[in-house]
Length: 177
Image (cartoon, rainbow, N blue to C red; front, side):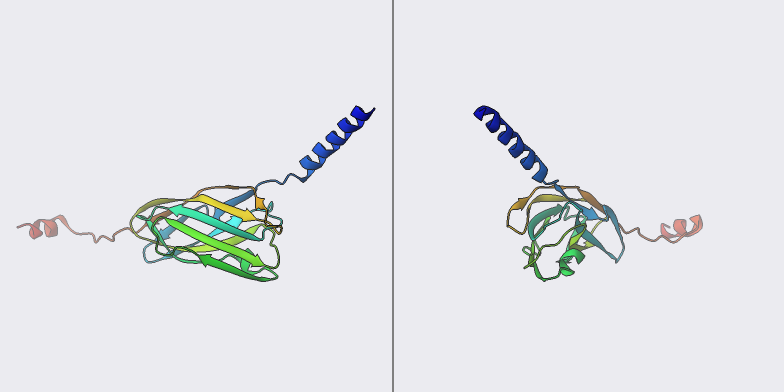
């Protein structure tokens, strides 16, 4: 009888653990595949999905191809900026090629997704496509416990075509005579 009670208690405990298991949060980029053209910039948001129900803070390291694009500004996303409490966001390594390290937190409250936690403004350097990926990071809840997450990579394309002027064959030949 005692072993039956222990077995039943263990089963209930397993059910409780399974019931409280949280779905991992998905971190992604919006737009997932952005494009920059000549003399323009692109705003890319780092977003969390609806599985983020108790997000209090985060530290993220994002990578990109620094030969194609460069970040010019990193600011709090709409989810963090619109929180019911104050927030902070710090771009830890401005000027570091190929990586953006950012820390952010809601001060005194949690936020719930979906929404943008960071907004990055990119400028183009040379024609090409840059991956945009999470290198590492941690999301924290209101108890300062880590939140499991997955990161969906994105891309940023830069294209600045050179304008051409139609010219006659006679004019081209004249250049070389």
